[in-house]
Structures are given as structure tokens and as C-alpha cells.
Length: 375
Ligand SMILES: Nc1ncnc2c1ncn2[C@@H]1O[C@H](COP(=O)(O)OP(=O)(O)OP(=O)(O)O)[C@@H](O)[C@H]1O
Ligand SMILES: [Mg+2]
Image (cartoon, rainbow, N blue to C red; front, side, top):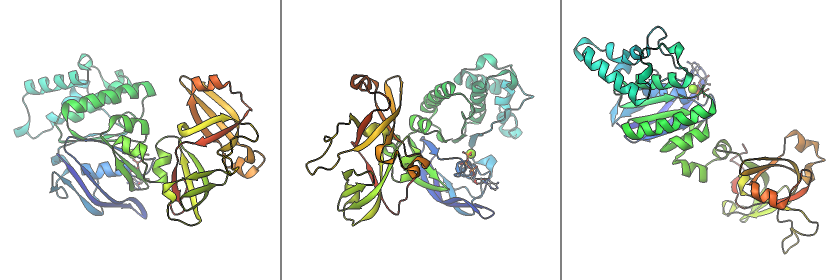
């Protein structure tokens, strides 16, 4: 079943929780809604499920307006953010619940229920704990049971609100791989809410980034990662360094004295500019006075001091402080640290030491002009 979200607005009192949200979700797609706490993710899911009504706009399932369709009849499976299994029921009964509460005419027989529940428990690999109570399960097991319960009624749409939010990093990682496999098996149109960018990028066919009730960008994980449409998306998806300056005629003059060519600053005259650079897009060299200059004698990079180096695994994470700003309290207050990631091997080959003076040069930068303010 496809889902069409049309111009949805939702207000709580004076607070605008969703602003003109429109989105098309294809049948069988797995979509991640990604955004910071309070941006409206749960509200949007609840509206799709029919637990909340939009002030303006509508939700369509395969083209049909759902406005007058009751929650019960929408065929939606929901795993809540703060899930609650029924504590007084066994795992088996939790999963069977949705089938047992059906009107008698649609209710499967006891034998059919048993078969269905056991096959779902096998699917989530927990058939061996069917007789336990929720309090006897680990957090990850409870989440999988919650998912099995949602799947029991054969939903056409599956809504997952931070299903792995409360779990530790390793279990989360296992469960999201497992969820992806499950989705590939069942092809239920699914919307998965998370505020964890890595989780969204790894699991989803398409990522929708939301900020303050508005869709900032939608695209494949690769599209949103490679080409963030706004400064917000840039900052939200991964680490990023922000450099300020001014742009004229395709060239950006950064406050640190460095210059960049940028197509983003094409036909403009003296506009405020923000250059965003990923830590792994910074070239790092040792500084030697009189070098690191271009033909016009301008610095090719930013002179920095290596404040701290963290080498864990294959990547060296360098905390760099611009030399010009080491004296300036203004910059210190704003925590003006540049972060560079270089291969640990390169770090060792260069023999860099904390306290040394280095030069960093962006290999790649994305420039946004004034109206698109900094993060
Ligand atoms: N019933 C309500 N009454 C008033 N305000 C609400 C209500 N439900 C949500 N809000 C507000 O709407 C905004 C969006 O809430 P929502 O729960 O959708 O955020 P979220 O993106 O799911 O956040 P989180 O990641 O923390 O779960 C928040 O500012 C929240 O306080
Ligand atoms: Mg939420």
C-alpha cells in the first residue's frame, strides 16, 4: 500500500508541530523519518495511524483519502516509542492479542491463532520464549515481541517509532540489520522514526529529514549524505566544520585568511558565506613558515595548532585550534575547534605530536550564502 501525505499541518495550542508536510511513500518502501527531539516525528506517525487528526491536509492510502477511516480499519501496525507489552500476558498472548480482539466473524480459530503466533515468533527468532512474561525478557527481546505483535494483524502499513531507542549501541545495530532483513522478506510499507542518523542511513530506502515540523530534505541515504540541501541537514547528518566568510564571483574569502573557489558562490557580490566541510575532507600537513602559500603569496590553508589527537582504530580524530584565534576569547567562547579525520596510518607516518602547528586545507566544501544561516 502506498501512502500519500498531503499538506499536513498540525498545531497544539499556539505551537505549530507540523508545517505543510507532503510526502509520497511507495508501496513496500522502508522510509526513515529523521530529526531532532521535538521536530514532529511522532506527531506525523500518529496522524498517519489515525490516532491524531491534522488541522489541514490529508493522508491517502493507495490514493484513497483516510480522513473518515477509523484507526481500527486503517490496517496499520504500530510499535510505539515507549512501547508497552501487556505485563500480565505471556509473550504468546501479547502477540495473539490483535487477533483475539477481532469481531467474532473475522476472528481466526484457536488453531489458526496458535499457528500464526508461533510462525511470527519464529520470524522474530523468539519462539522459544513464548510462555514467558515481558518482565522476563531483555529490552531487545521485548522490542522484537512488540514488532511481532504489530505484524500479527497483517498490517498494510507498519509504523515504528524509535523501536530501538532504549537499547545499547550493539543491540541496536543488530536489531536494525535484522529489521532490514525482515522488511526485505515481508515488503510491508514501513515508516521508521529515529533521531539517530547512522540508523536512518543504514536501514532505510529513503530518508526524510525533518526540522521544526518541516521536511528539510528527502532522498536516498546517499543523496542526503552526499548532497545535503540545507545547513541544517549538513549539520545533522554527521560531523561538520563551519567556516564563515564572504563570497564574490565564485570565490569565498574565509575569516581565517584562506580562500576557496566555489560554484555555490557563482554570481554574487560580497555576500556573507558559510562553508561546510566534513572532517574527512580536510587535508592536514605540517606547517613550515613561508610555505603553504599560493602563487599570490596567500595561505592555501588555515594555520592551526593540534590540541588533541584521538587515535582509536583506523581513524585519527584531530582537534585543531586556529592559530589566529588562540588569543581571542571570542573564538574560545564559541568553541571554535576544527575537527579533522585522517587515516591513523597517515597520522603515524607524519609523526604528529600534540601542540604542533599544522595547516589544514579543505578538499571539498559546500557553501551556503547569507539567508541560509549557520547551524
Ligand atoms: N498532545 C500534545 N499537546 C501539546 N503539544 C504537543 C502534543 N504532542 C506533541 N506536542 C509538541 O509537538 C512537538 C512535536 O512532538 P513530537 O512528539 O512529534 O516530537 P518528536 O519528533 O517525536 O520528538 P522525540 O524525538 O523527542 O520523540 C513537541 O514540541 C511537543 O512538545
Ligand atoms: Mg517521538
